[in-house]
Amino acid sequence: MTLQELLDFIKSEDQRLIEHFGKGADKEKIILARTVKLTEELGELCDEVLTFNKDQRKEKLENYNKENLPEEFADVIITAFLLAKVMRVDIEKALEKKVKKIINRKY
Image 1 (cartoon, rainbow, N blue to C red):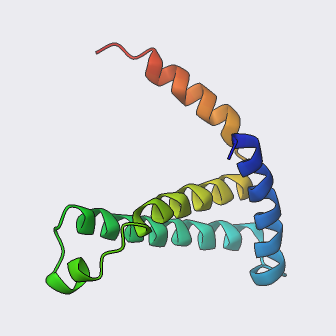
Image 2: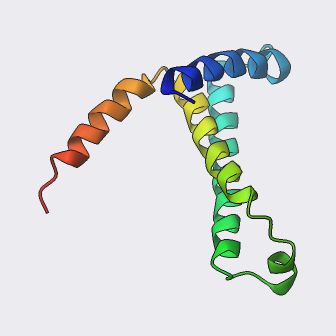
């Protein structure tokens, strides 16, 4: 998937979510809901990382599915992109700027 394909998906998913959950909701409520959702998704990713490192209780380790980890990364990325969209952040420009900044760091 290209970045443009992801951005196109984010645009359509944003519209779908607003139609399904956000009719009548103001921008602040949507931002809060997406921020909470991002926190939830990050928690699920952390849970998968702990399981990946075998730092979970026995039951979780026994039920581990290695396919979950990549999906949790994707959930965090998609949810972060949706939050950026509703906050009118040009994520493509933000990524370009941040990557340049990281490249130019002196260690």
